[in-house]
Length: 394
Image (spheres, rainbow, N blue to C red):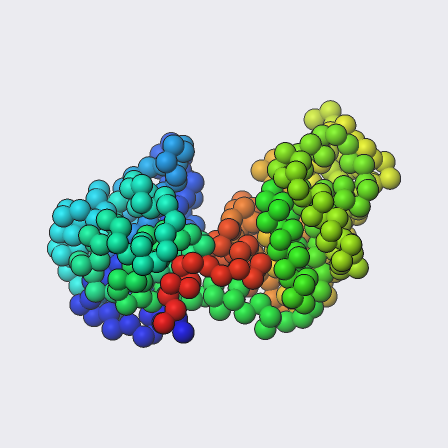
């Protein structure tokens, strides 16, 4: 059983609330606040119940361009929330504990980037994670813990799995919704159609195998680099450029795709044409006219028409990964139109990460559920357990 905010007596309690507000940054701060907006309901509810809320979060990774403090995030949360949100440039020191103690009921403070501390970039078993400095020093200042960071739930890090060992733990509203949808895919309307694209080729093939073997997928539509791996496995000569992109991402992908075709070829669909850049223009190339000197950048109109027909009759459409280089307007066609077709299914689910980013950029709306987690969503769809979810079970 996993407890939720419905089970929490929050009034006057000091809550440690783990959120995932890891966001793209620009010259002037946050370039996209979608992940912050996702947690507004949970934080506002906790504050509205009279809790004193200490927010825990990370931004970027050590050595990366987007590794920064959380001051801009605190300012934006203060704008978005009904409750006041302060900022503390410490995470578990006396300054952090004092900032929590100084909160009035209904107020929140965002503590500093958890990844400023090396422990948070390591994996631990929960009981060991509870003994780290981050958890052992901050937990005494808290009465309970809420995990709303589904996007980080596949990581066995102290802020994810350590606090539930030290404190009573609950799922926030984001976490609760994700588990209700992604954790109960087998109860969604049939037929179920998975659309797998993007650059995480091996992960997508693992998802395909899992959902096909478990009988969760009636059809798997492949696109992007994933689709190209299946075409290569099926003996299609794409050309050196496209093959090189696939092998650069994963030298195991073509064999894995071939093994899956051997077992489930009747349920796996591959692109019928590709789009390339030729003389600065988008050019669509049928499979019969391959190989092409240029790398595949998108699916073509024939593929879209075939896939749209399948999605039209879908009970549930699950999308993970864009089918093309949607950042280039010449190759956004496949992503925009395929996503639009998926919204016409009885139930439509977006698997987070690049898929959700593409959806927002292209202005495609109408999905029933948009996951906040890319890697976490992939793992859950693959049937794997998530360390952060298991830590919440009582």
